[in-house]
Length: 166
Image 1 (cartoon, helix red, strand yellow):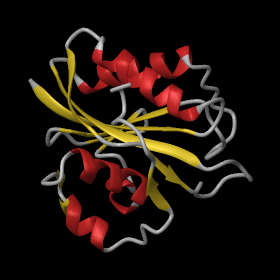
Image 2: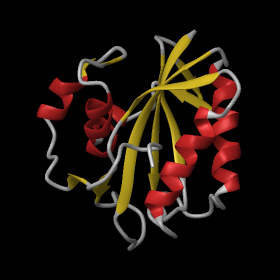
Image 3: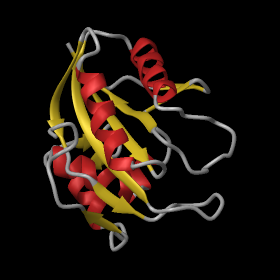
């Protein structure tokens, strides 16, 4: 089994619901099992047009699916939630990113793993550290050290269960 890190984000149409539902859907995907979950975090949008704050989370999965198949599964779940890719860094009902997959590396435009710039993003690293405090970003270093070097003031935990536990 391989281990993968998936970041979840949304800022439209009840984002917390979309994240919880997506986590349940991922956990029901054949060959995928969630083994770690973060709480939900409210974060300010980065770049793009004026838009509402995001709700973000991270899940850790064990899977027998290869990275390309897992990413296709994630895109399918995004589509089920009405995801439209028309504005770069624009608002969305659901965004699922494959952040890391074991020590696998790919620079293919369709599958960039580890996810570029994720090691610089509080909205990924803070939830990832919440889900797996001893995690290491492949090729970069311990997540907690990366978080310590970031401005995390705009990343606040929301009351309630971890993603997919509701």
